View: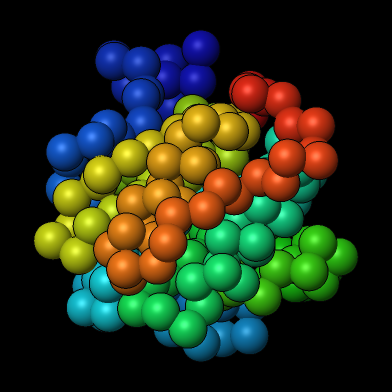
Length: 175
C-alpha cells in the first residue's frame, strides 16, 4: 500500500468537503507563479490534479476545459496541478486544448500530498473562504455537474448541464 511505502501509518485519503484547503504557491509550465490565496481572492477555484499518462485524466480534462470556457470571463478559476515535467505538461495541455493554467507540483509532490491524493484525477471545488465545497476522485459525471452548477450559481448564470444530451458519457471512471 502507498501509505506504507512512504512511511505513513494511516492510509492516505483525499481531503473532503468542509476541510480548509491547504495553501500553495506553484508555477505554470511557462514560469508564471500562482498562489491559492490570490486565486481565492477572485472567487471559487476548481483545482484538478493530474498526470499526463493517466487515461482518466485525458478523458476528464476536455470537460474541465468546457467548464473553463463557460466561466472564463467570470470571477472563477479553474486550475490544473500536474505531477509531470513542464515540457510534458505543456504538450498534454496543447494536445487536449486546455487553456486554463496548469501548475507544476514540485519534486516529492508536496501539494498533492497536502491534499491527500491517492488517485488522479482528483478535483476539488474550493470556496472563496478556502473551504472545500465538493471533491471527486476519478471521473465523476455527477460531481462535475454539481461543480458546474455551483459555479454558475455563484456568478449568477443560468445553470446548464456540462454534458450535452448527444454525448454518451459514463457516470464514473476510476482514476
